[in-house]
Length: 264
Ligand SMILES: [Zn+2]
Image 1 (tube, rainbow, N blue to C red):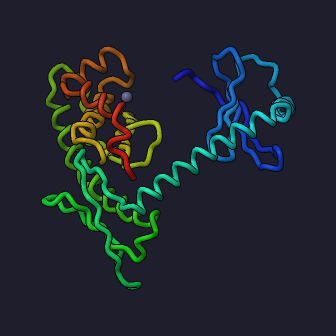
Image 2: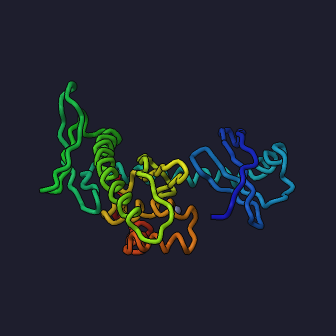
Image 3: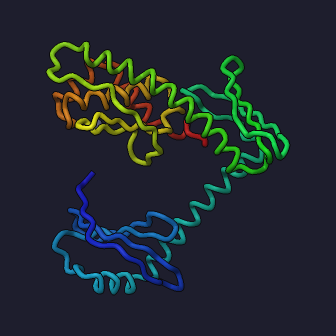
């Protein structure tokens, strides 16, 4: 991604709406407006633009009020549609969730007020049994499933961490040794994993649990390879491919199969 540098941020009222904005410098020719949330904009300015002060930026935003409101409306409309579709899908039977690339049918049961909400994955029948107080509460059902998935991811991370640690340190030709990394599972929007080599820390994206096993493996090996090379150079990929020859194939699935595997 092109480098961007935050210039300033703030908020103003446009057409009776409270709008937050962030302003970046970005090596592009024109000013670019992009809606990032229901009430927030990112403004990319070409470097050395004349809109350098907050006053000028807000003046520019006011001048373009109509366009901005229309962009915000479109964004909100799309989000509402998405939410509606998900709700409809759920009403007509929230049918399935993918765990390690395998489709599990969802079976909902209601429990009493005092019961403990939980989700249990049954590998044999490829079913997730969800026990909730109110079956209609879509968000709560998802949350219960996600909590159970989180324990699965954590278990898996422990196992993969030890495996990658062993494989990396057994690899010939790598000068540095890797530490047994401290793993954090996170919800990340734009990355599958990250590695802070100096601190021996690796973060893993929670959503990987939906994808086939080789995908989470490939991310682990990718992050471990950063203990050898902290960039994405040729040397980095040489190490990575030695550690995990199926890397490209797994990476392709991660890039192309979001619509198949991610249903929550
Ligand atoms: Zn990387």
